[in-house]
Amino acid sequence: MADVTKRMLDLLAALQAGRAFSGEELATRLDVSPRTLRRDVERLRGYGYPVHARPGPGGSYQLGAGRRMPPLVLDDEEAVATVVSLAVLAAATYSHPGGLNDAADRAYGKIDDLLPRRLRTRVAALRASIEAERRPFPDIAAEALGEIAEAAAAEEIIVFDYIDAHGASTQRRIEAHRQVHIDRRWYVFGWDLNREDWRIFRTDRLKNMRRTGRHYAPRSLPTDWALAYLRAGLGDF
Image (cartoon, one colour):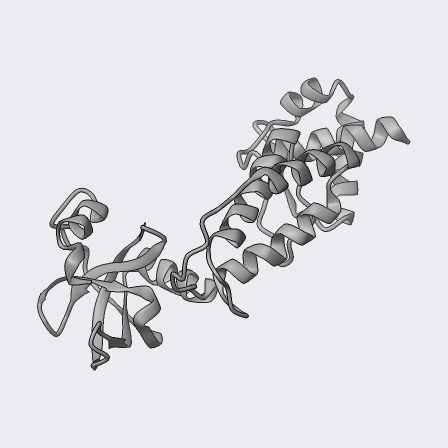
């Protein structure tokens, strides 16, 4: 049973690389017969992993995206990097329910519970030894970052009410292009359709943000790096 478990974990770790593997390649890597490989693939499917198979000459196996997230397989370095990154994010800023830092703290706890004892001890020591400056920077809703990212990828116009530094509110329609993280704040970089110019908006000042379903034509950016554009006029934001 131990050999089967190790073989299944090795197979899953290989498939999580994201590319397609031929049956011969996987069988050789795992040192098993093609028949055993097929049985192991069926076991993974039974556990909820959507392994797609393309039969025939040149056939392959590839891990697809599922409707739910099954357990991940991380090596020791990946597990430590993941948990420490979440711990630093959770510790860096005061959080509120639904915020990015709150989500990071919850995710940290879930992953930490799944770590083997040898890694849990190391990660606990790392977390205890890390001091992250805690400053009153605004927390951002994880959902907002995801919505903006999807709009930018789909070249879709978003609308929102924007609260400026003086508390005044204006409605904006922009072509979202980039998200920028600098000095522990999040910004949206895009073409303002009302001003007909490039603008940068602090994400924590966006209210009632929504996607419109209307798409825009690709537009040449005024700079290779939105970060440099933001730095040049940071005092205005």
